[in-house]
Amino acid sequence: MIDPSETRAAEWGRPERAEREPGWSWNDLFLALAVTILGAALVVLAGRGLIATLGVRAEERLIDPAVYVVGAGVYLAAILGVYLFGARKAGWGALGLRGARWPYLAVVPLLLCVQLFLLVLVNSAVSALAGGFENPQVDALTGGRVLSTGELVALLILVAGLVPFAEELLFRGMLYPLLRRRMGAVLAVVLNAACFAAAHVVPLLLPGLFVVGLILAALRERSGSIWPGVFLHALQNGTALLLINEALRQGLV
Image (cartoon, rainbow, N blue to C red; front, side):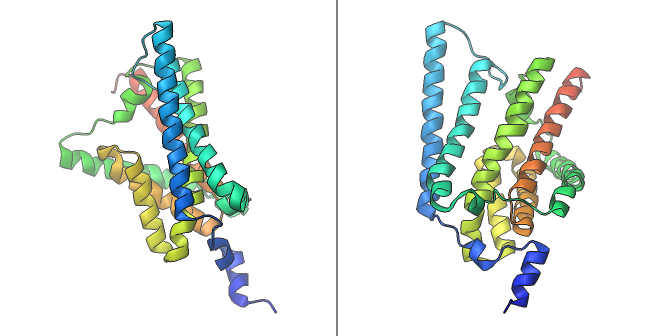
């Protein structure tokens, strides 16, 4: 006999109880984070050694080749950590790498518009309270210079490709099911968003990142997949990069 509650859960995209029982533990998550941190440290050390050997000077912007490789290495290390302590234990599907129903994919462009609108409101409030708002990502990504076409494409591959996939895999794929197992959806979404914002360690951006995290976690809860979140995250990052570059071109920042 089919349980009507399970039918409704499947119809609305809500994860069934069995899907909320991850095949990994908090210890596995911490080990995945340890792999990420260790991998990042090794990549940074290797990058510094290579720079010293070649006698070149790395610029403090992500598009610099040395910094770019280090950044990519950090996110690849995160994916490796999730694979070792999540996917190998429970499979990629348990991490949310499963197909999503089309309405959750179709709504992504609308959610992007809502998200951008909310970010404008939140950042305006932060600016009013802080007496000004200078997005630190402008210098971190571009060094305050207009990107060439090649540089723009390279950055889009990283910040709108690798970064969203790795972050969604870690925060909504591995962390969210652990939170959801012990608490209701609302609290799990809020805590997941808080962890996502705090992990970026950029005080001025914390409120905005928290709002983004709420939308991404809610999308994970409703769809049972991380793919809609990956696409929304990718569009968000890609749009932000394009707007930053255009603002630099126009002399607005």
